Image (cartoon, rainbow, N blue to C red; front, top):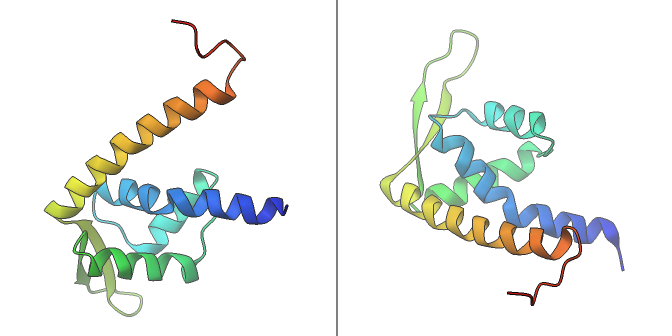
Length: 115
């Protein structure tokens, strides 16, 4: 079994949630998303982020606006739509359930079946 493949699959499963979580805090420029992800210990490449942002936009979870830049081309800032905020809430609940279950199973070994 290949550990790198397993690690990659685990990361892919949470990327959308993490990206939406960053954008939920306020409008976000893609390089800011990458920076916040890296600061949290999750490296993400532009080649991974941009297709995800496009897919989330096409699913009507995100919208964007162009902002003129003094130092180059206009920048695209992403924000959650109402549908995206609702979707995020569902993901957050799912994450909490999943994290709780995984922590119970991987934490200090106790008899899980005890009342």
